[in-house]
Amino acid sequence: MNSLKFFTKSVLRPTYRLHAVTQRHANSGSVVDPPEDPNILIPKPKQRDNEPLEQRKARLLYQSRKRGMLENDLLLSTFINKHLNSFTETQLEKYDNLINGPSNDWDIYYWATEIKETPEEYQHEVMDMLKLHVKNLNREQRLRQPDLK
Image (cartoon, rainbow, N blue to C red; front, side, top):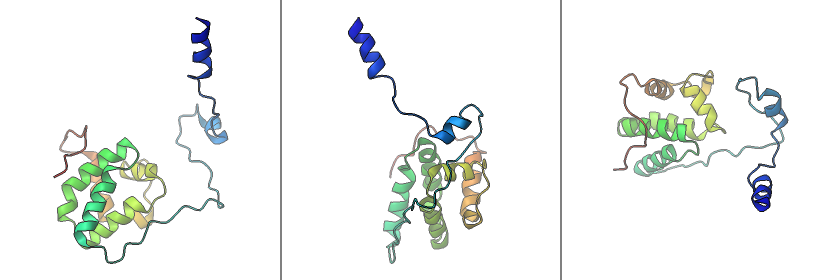
């Protein structure tokens, strides 16, 4: 029994500490971003000049499905499944910049759900379409990503 107690204390308990900002605001219930640090350089998305249209659509489909957070995987994969084939080249460009421009997927989620105000550079027709999609006025079931065709 003593070995189980040791195992529980040493292995199952996390040993990390929360960031100081997180600790201060943990009980407030408010959404708090960590402070901006000018010394941290966030890489810009790769420029893809002369990318063929079909390759671009395939890349955007993949990037919409593999975001790193389930909420955006579901929102963006169902959105792109509905609109990818009808997008103009301009709309594809705007969508590409939208999902590859911000450094944080939570920003996209907050903008699409209108928790935070969308910055001017991302306020366009594609973002309006995404916000309307998020509202789900038709009450579609979106519990999983659409099947690939």
